[in-house]
Length: 162
Image 1 (tube, rainbow, N blue to C red):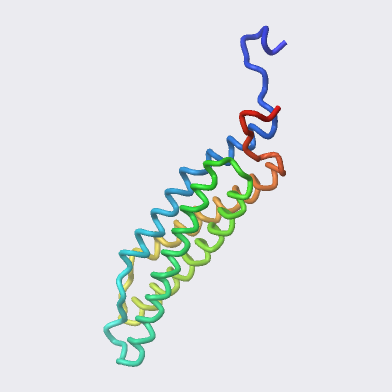
Image 2: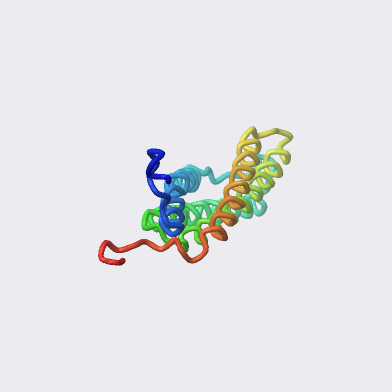
């Protein structure tokens, strides 16, 4: 009946699931690029009002954030590469990276607020971190849903398999 209406027959569920996994690769690549950008461009600083000992603590916290951003960025890039294979496991890796990203964005918003408030200032980057956390939370939710919906059928097919 579908062929008579000019439509192609529906693809098997596994093929649709693998296509959905492959479709997530671009967004994972973008998240990875954002994390790597911030991880490489993040400035190590401290409030001007901080003493020498407090400044060392602020510097250490900023270094931790730099490395966490880089690590999460790499995880996103690995998940993007793995998503191109169409395997469901890429969604699990993406969900883990998304969750870590959200937690880190919230931590960055808090740290930036505390740092700038120590000098009586405000940093608009806090807004960016909150928006990225919201986007990341939506992505984590969608990725977890897709992971559950794909079941175990999102495995790539080899050309010789029947």
